[in-house]
Image 1 (spheres, rainbow, N blue to C red):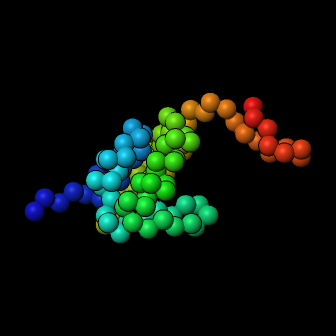
Image 2 (image 1 turned 120 degrees about the vertical axis):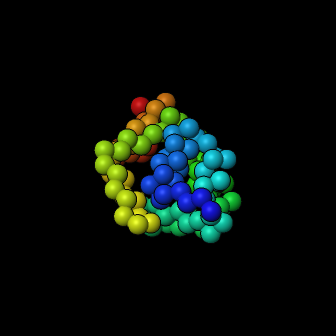
Length: 102
């Protein structure tokens, strides 16, 4: 049996994000994959993740990529520290009179 390191899988997953590669992401996810966002909302299941999380994400954030400055792997846990960049066509901000497109 071939074993792939968790760090390698995490880097492959990020490469799929950089390339907006839905098929590649799906191939790396388990059937019981859980996506958890910063508000602790959870999407369960590979198919749900593709349709409800990643496909809309790539449409809303074209050119999104992560820049990692530090990667640490300990057992099955991988910590990737850095920042993200995205190409935006416009920026929507909230001002007292409502939303405004810049």
